[in-house]
Image (spheres, rainbow, N blue to C red):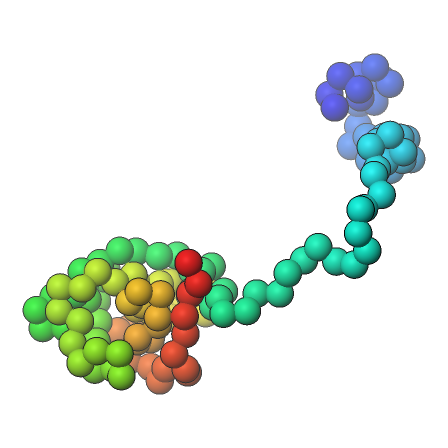
Length: 131
């Protein structure tokens, strides 16, 4: 692209944007556009995947003998769940969510949610991350 702009003596952002819009993109589309083999959308609906877990910042931790996960300076006390009574020495993921809360998941299932002070928050519903 820089060589293309230099060839046409384009030196400003405004001229470059105008060149892209009026010349380069139409020419590119004319040369490389291919009709799709099938009609309809190629996008597939996400079914059993919790995007909040997938799109979070994740940190690996191991649960201590007192069912506590240490994250930064917080001690996150894991409550008993229907899945397991205790998670002692289990590998878990601590999730930093976009809403500034934390979550702890075990084998793709969110088992606890906390605020940034380390207080336990209500868990909406059991969630699963598809592998």
